[in-house]
Image (cartoon, rainbow, N blue to C red; front, side):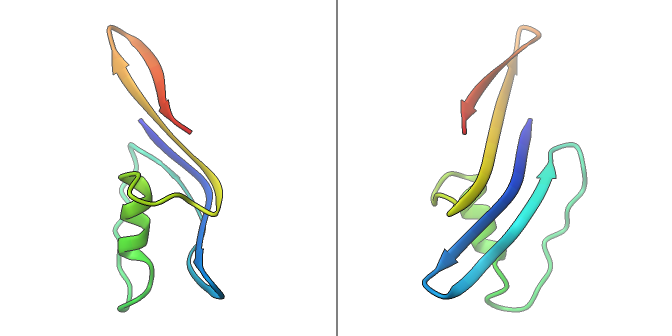
Amino acid sequence: MLRLRNITKSFGQQVAVDQITFRSGQNHPLLGENSAGKLTLMDLIYALSQPGAGKIVMMAASSGSTHPTRQ
């Protein structure tokens, strides 16, 4: 399970991702112009970059329980 809450990522004055919120189990197409923040959002989800604000929670289900892996 993946949850993003109010994720924001900026590079200087340029805001690449602005208050994104969603959870896994929903369909979220990533569409936008060049430099719209699609790759930055994927980098945040894959932990290749850290958000400037907000919270990312990944839960791994095993044996019927959930364990937080990153916040």
